[in-house]
Length: 420
Image 1 (cartoon, rainbow, N blue to C red):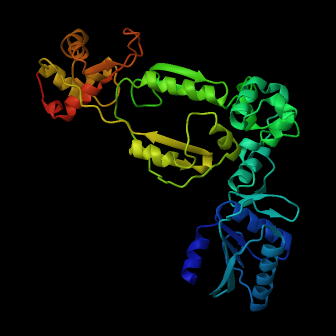
Image 2 (image 1 turned 120 degrees about the vertical axis):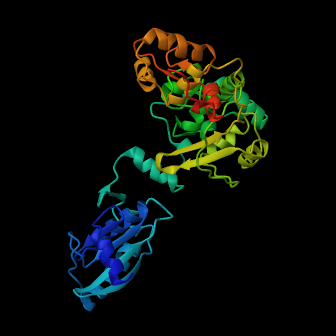
Image 3 (image 1 turned 45 degrees about the horizontal axis):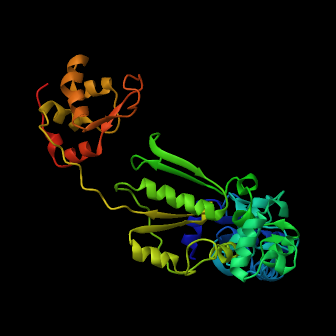
């Protein structure tokens, strides 16, 4: 970093990526700063700079002392150790020590007291929320979500008959022949800990999984169009129960809903053929319960069967999405004659409009004439539709182009002017 680069960075002020410090004397305090950066994407600490961005400067002795302090803090006061890089920038006011902290590969990083620090704006904060701590351990591969014990769950919440059927199918002997309590068998299979079933155990074999895990269910909605925010839909179902039941009901919903194809929008593609088993215990047992095989090849097989799939990883919100593009249906054909009045109406429609707005766009004063000559023929031809079709006389009623209407305009028919 050159002096002009340094001055530009300082002029932008402190933020989650840049921290200013006039000096540092405490290894524990420096360790907390380094851990916070490593847990939050990494970046830069400037030593010899006041909080307002002005350069206080350091002499050579201070730089030597601070380099030793940083080395000690990073190696002895942070767990696991960090490896920051430092370099000096000469300015008219003295030296500025620039400390580059990389984004940590082994999160979470802790101080000697076992505290986890993260950046919060230009400052740092101590992570105390259990859920946030669990997410950090999961991302670091130190804890898998499926192995977290389920609060208030007991062995009595496990469907022993379902577990017995699986056990016999998988291991070739009945529960009674195993001569061990169900609680012990669950622990041996990593489905429980200290008598408490974990998420994998409850989701696979729970009598009523959603009583203990209300978020572990599917909400399926069949929209008539392609907008997720649309209030109109053709079918919906809340799909709960153990994992195998959710799979069967989810597939049934898809099969009964896919009666026609429609165009859709995809997102930025993140394609990979590398297996990442985030929930190893769940995957291990689900492979013997659900009708699929070939662990680690699912993405590749899906892409072979249907190449137009977007795989979108959003780790900042703990979400992974698979967007399947449907084939684009041929534009609906408009049959019969379209009057100049209807063509003119189509040409002014952009989004949703009520009657008054459409009359204004067309410079028409008489509502009856507008409805009879423009609106009703367009509705009859299937080129325009109501936003509230169940309540034609609603005061909130608006109108918009149908798929056929948009296709008709796209073909160049919407640029024709007709008589008023």
